[in-house]
Length: 420
Image 1 (tube, rainbow, N blue to C red):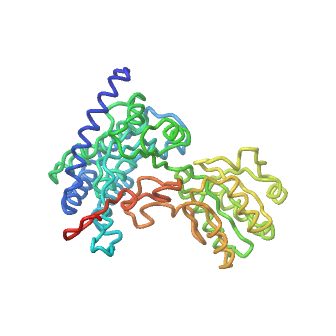
Image 2: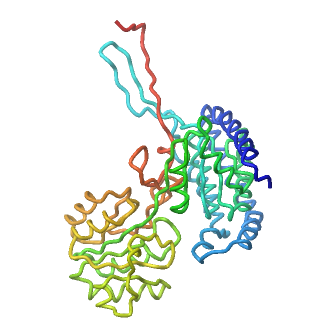
Image 3: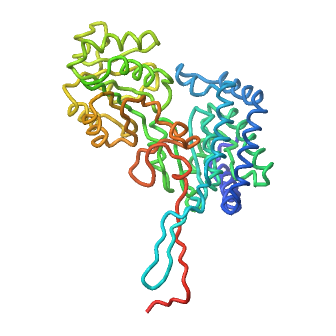
């Protein structure tokens, strides 16, 4: 593979120009045409499952890393079926384009409308999980945006196989295959070209580890919608139901440890710790979880490993849980403010007043009451999928679906008005 940065910049520029042309066609296509592309793409994914799995085995054979990393990379028949189902779910959602977001008439008779439209060309850089490409393609196509994908080198062959199915769906619907393109190379020079794509990419979305997101935010010359780190907390308040807490924590931590919605830190009120903690630790240990605990928790369960200085600032993305005892709701909120990533945080309690205080005071993109943090997911929110979880303060927060992939313009209708 040619490692010359200029060579990869030229390849990217050609792809971006094709995406720009495709975006104009896509933006003016009917909802029926875009839905047809999604449904045909879903059929292609289902029919091409064997080829996708073979490509994924090729990636897995070359991969190194933890079991959690392997889980993020691995595709199964069920996960491919879920990708296809995701495309069908997005096709069934209302058309996000052309929505009149607001409308008013000025004293001079001018009628002004704010109307939803596509962003244009979206670039996405992601790691490990190849199914992310299918989710992103579904949402981009439905919202009328062309998409330039660059998956991680570890998922190269899987991503290419999935992209081929999306391209087949586009062709079947009569749309340009260049509406969705995936990088033909694993060379990092292609990423550098995306970061410097002023005038070629309208929005860049990094989805992966902290190092990737920080690099994109630091180096990008185009607007960035970052997929935030998921240093998520579940706080068990003194008024929590014991059995509910056990069930929720087990799911929040261990349903899938490698997803960004997994709980990484358990906060537990001291008043109930002696009753709750042994049972919760036993439940999680039986599921294969390991622990890092503060002095209060170790005092109750001396077998727990003591937490180190960085353990409450670590997104484990693995079967590891940090545990801390707190005096009350205020101390729990203070800990989350000091150590959290403003992604997803939950409270378990039967005290409605305490829950509402928690939900009002956390700065997180998603707050939950008596529910698992793993519900922080675009599909679970009814978005049909997600292109990421945004934790920034501008444009979008939380799961990013169709609505968040549109911007707006103003349409002004008059009847001969001139400005005095």
